[in-house]
Amino acid sequence: MTRSNGKRSNTRDNHSRPFKLHGGEHISTYLQNYKVGDYVDIAINSSVHKGLPFKYYHGKTGRIFKISKSSLGIKIEKTVGNRKILKKINVRIEHLRISKSNIRFVEKKISRDQIRRRGEATMDKKFHLRETIGFPPEKHIVSFENVKIVTPEPYCIII
Image (cartoon, rainbow, N blue to C red; front, side, top):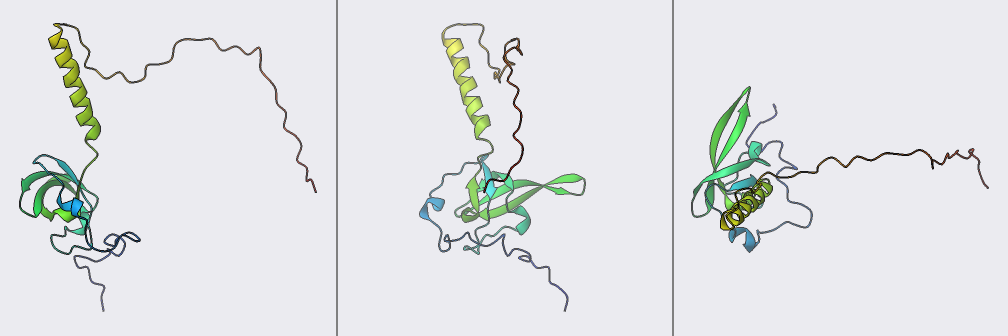
């Protein structure tokens, strides 16, 4: 008999729950707020069989384009050969979590906005929005006057 290639084939570890985390879903999963345009990570929860995405999408990040009562519509770019295809899938909330990949960008956007508003409020024409990432260290001279020469001890077995 040939080996089958069904929807859930090769998902023994992929669709299994972590140790001591079996059972129903917590209420906090359902109380999460989602907005259109948010980034979400798809993490398949095998304890919920409805609204299960295909195994390829496990671990992928997408953007919300539609919100319904118990599921979200997500846009994901799928690489097929040498091109990327935009896929739209509907996934239940239990299989999703808000992505943390975009947090640094959002924080940077908020801080830049605050700097701009402060500059406009004080009528200051010069305010820098660019992020200052570690400049090279200042010039200094390295002296080799106080160099200690260390010689290794010979290998010996102490009994």
